[in-house]
Length: 272
Image (tube, rainbow, N blue to C red; front, side, top):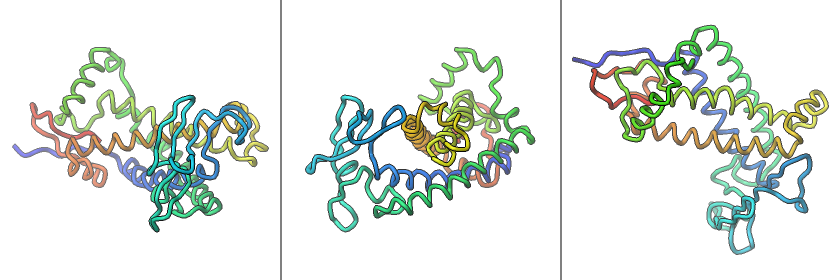
């Protein structure tokens, strides 16, 4: 019997997915360039070379290193010290291939970052509003009481570890997908926006309480960086799962909205 088509993603979800993919890519790469201007993170209000940083990316003239707390890792060739496209040594935290623009330009990086931050924030707001109105949150992201059962969660973890994806329920999200999507959409992405606002002197004047919530501009910057790292990790894991579960079906579902549902008993399928 031929596989049946099942709707998986609504139009608003698909549009937001691709807009968000573009916005987050530019935000990440321009953000890394901004980070290159001062590759150290602190907690509290103030931060300078004389203050104690909980994270630092730098070089010793001969080697690059990443320092987190009291732990130091050599990262020569990747972070801190690397070769540019012109084969010249670059003594910056992140190499040019990972940043926008590729050459050091803090002003241009900020313009890229702020422009796409508006696209990111407005897109997220529009997606949330549309998801409430069209039932996407209620139908696909709402975690029901039975799904909270430890046995159900553990079963889903084992199936993922064995690369067994429930293809005959292709129109629904499993519990691990719901956990990850809810965490990203309703926690990480809003935190990115609000910590970004908390770092703005103009917003500090307009909304001083936002600055206080995060216990200082440097704390907001640290949380912003941590959230960006978690989002980058989520995207990598998401891409791996799409490849393992069937990239053609997964990409098709995010373009047309439909997936092919496998017959009962076939556990290879969609995870996107």
